[in-house]
Length: 280
Image (cartoon, helix red, strand yellow):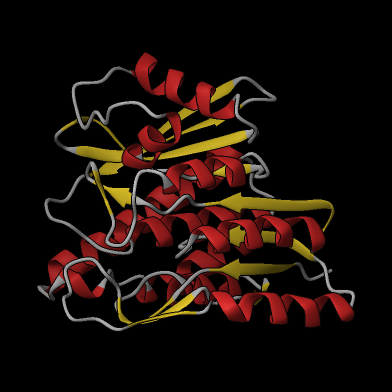
């Protein structure tokens, strides 16, 4: 039976991220993907100035009320950028109302990167995300977001494997069974993720080539591929490996093309091979 997923993200009209990334990646592997936009922006907020922002908080409840009247449930609920405290509580309720026994809830606690909060966020917002993460089966923070969730200082380099393992285990103690920590690196030449499965007490590290530069939207690409692989039956380490490989290839294509990475990474040219790989 075809699986379905609900992606709760913003729509950035320019710049590959959020729904313009999640929808094509999930759909490419045969997952029926519904969307719940949290905001509409003229561009994403990383590197652009003068962008427009329309908060869609007031639309979320009427949309979900209509869906509830239809008796809809989802095999997966995937949350990304949330623009207000009220959205945190609304999305928390949605995970309760539209889940069934086997629904996979994945929360990407989008708050910041490189040790800094994104525009329009404050550190107090992390407290609300902690509550939402308790309801998740899997969360995908980067190192900045993990530090915010744990109320600890951000450490961008010079850490050990045991340090990363400790972070993931502490995050798992708050509720989610699986943790995938992105932006992990132990050398200048490699970058990837660490994955922890609390039920199996299993930790995996997956790396690929590190390419210099800042590439926007890669967290959304990574999380969308990870979820697609999990819904296709991959185990966590294999799904994380797919996500690292796909994201690294998208960054490499973008770097080689010479196009300004502010517009996101070229994930489109990898979708066909990715979909075929998951099917095989």
